[in-house]
Length: 180
Ligand code: 5GP
Ligand code: MG
Ligand code: MG
Picture 1 (spheres, protein in one colour):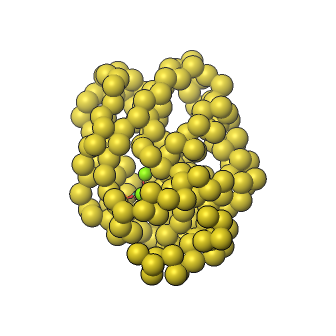
Picture 2: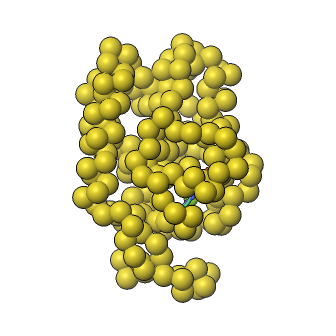
C-alpha cells in the first residue's frame, strides 16, 4: 500500500503534534460545557479518535454519514444524509469534526442543519483545509493544516475506500488513478 504513495505531505509526527495543540485549544474553549462532538463518517474517524484523547473536558460523541464524493474525485455538489445522529441537538454545543473542507458544501449544509435543529452553538474543527477549492462561504473554527488543491489520502481520507489506514497524509502516484 505505501508503495502507491508519491509523496508524504504531513507525517505521523506532524499530525500528532497538531492534534495535541487543537485538543488543548478546544479544551480551553469548552471548559464547563458538555459539547456533542459529531464526527463525519468515515474520513474523520482517525483524526477524531486522536483528537478526543487530547480534550480534557466532558464530551459526548455521535456520528453522521453524508454523501459527497463517493468513489469519484469531483464533488457532486449535492449533500445527502446516509446516517443521521442518534442524539437530540436542541440546546447543545455542537463541535463538528471533519477530515477536510474543499468546496465547503458538506459543512455549510451540516452547520445550517444543526442550527435549524436548534443547537445552541455550532463550531467546526477540520484537520485539513483546501481554501482554493471553496465554492460556498464557510470557515472552520479550528484548522489543522491548509493543503494545496491536490487530492490527498491517508489518516482517514480515502481513494475508492482505500488508504484510510495510512498513518500520514500523502498524494498517490498518478498511475493509481489511471488503473481505475
Ligand atoms: P466539500 O463538501 O467541502 O467539497 O467536500 C468535503 C468532503 O470531500 C470531505 O469530507 C472529503 O470526504 C472529500 N474530499 C475533499 N477533498 C478531498 C481530498 O483531497 N481527498 C479525499 N480523500 N477526500 C476529499
Ligand atoms: Mg469528510
Ligand atoms: Mg471519500
